[in-house]
Image (cartoon, rainbow over all chains, first blue to last red; front, side):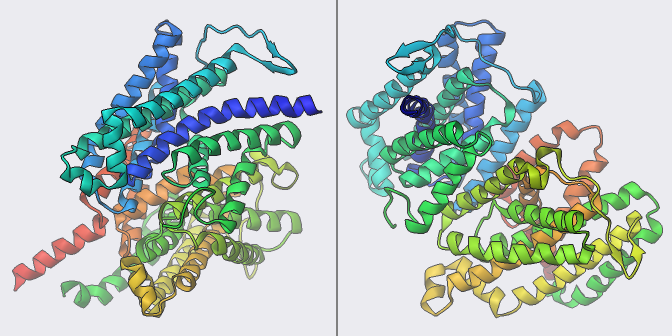
Length: 288
Length: 317
């Protein structure tokens, strides 16, 4: 029984790490730009779709395909920001939500148009033989996911804390007017921020798409989960998004293992509801 | 105001046209489209109270559509109750649920409200899919009875058209009274500046709750109507597709007005049918329309129409 719990805990942490990636992307976009990006789930889906296309269809090297897929989605995010969101800086949240819902419908239906509704899997070079780590059984795919998620979060932390771009981002995050005064090109920072957030969603899509499957409608439940995590962690809170992701992953995994896999998605939702009754501004959030 | 002077005759003409429509529309399929438009109007008109008047974007309107549809269908199927009793049960359960859910969600603002409302609908969808012994899961519930009134069975499209018209008329009247009352003015003041409105004693929670419950009851009535009209129901009723369609209709038609939802529902039911053979492009176009309208035409077609009428009136003298 206790090994079973340990096994589910590890599974949950690995899935949760990819949720964390997605949620960090979402919270970056909200925290800096006040945009609730409803298309985040579709950017996540697009990551998986591009990776499938490059790796399984064009036969590209798996790792190269992953990097290219993420880069392509970052370009999509960059273009959307410059073409659409740039016109709406400072507009009420309602307008930007509608616009990102529009993008989400557009991306999803265009993918269905070209791809059809059936699910596909990304061909990965990983063997399916189990790896035993003490009492816990893992696969190469899961180890790869954990390593990539950890490395990317650590890399992002370094970029934000140590580089000039990171300083500009933090300055804009804190006070955009003051940042403008000291000569930061806010529009560029916003565009880069949106592209980075999109890239994180896409990366999560490629990783989960390798472990499970890729299909055009995968974005909705993903975006709902990412929002739940962001709410748990407090909107705009990076650390909260990572911990929230891990927590949701573990809760789902335990619920699927010990209660019912059909209801596993319900528990995350119930926890957030309960949390909001007690703490309307999230686990780590402060009243604004 | 040209609009004000014209209002009563225009309204009477519209009502007459709507009542007489089945006399000259002999095509059942076209009647079906109008019934469909009316069904969406019941949803969008309620959503408009929240989004247009109160300024809260709810993405969980499908929750009450689904609750209404399932309650009505189950009460009718399992207890053999009449349509009207099933409708009453649907309204009753939605009243209780919307009050309880309102207690949680109305304390939240902005992004939190949007997301938690969506989560609520998703939760109910999961329950409807997995509680197979009650809802028959994804297989759905077939054979839901058609309504009857004093022994008269609703069978033809014309029957359902008039039932739809009854609901649409009743709801429009209620909404008209609501938005022109203290409640409507309180909502608009909260939308424009919540802090200011609260400071002069307008309770955001109280008026939020009234509006939220009203919108939910409309959605439940729409759900009940849908279940007994189509006579089959599955968990897709909670689907985000319905939410998207409602939003596109509301935003394009014009939120915060009575005519806006009517315009939106008619246009987005009838126009896609005129462009038959292009179904696969419908959703991409919906997405683009939403983006373009939100940026360039935030008041929707109703706003555009108002501006045209004003210009005409000014030129007249």
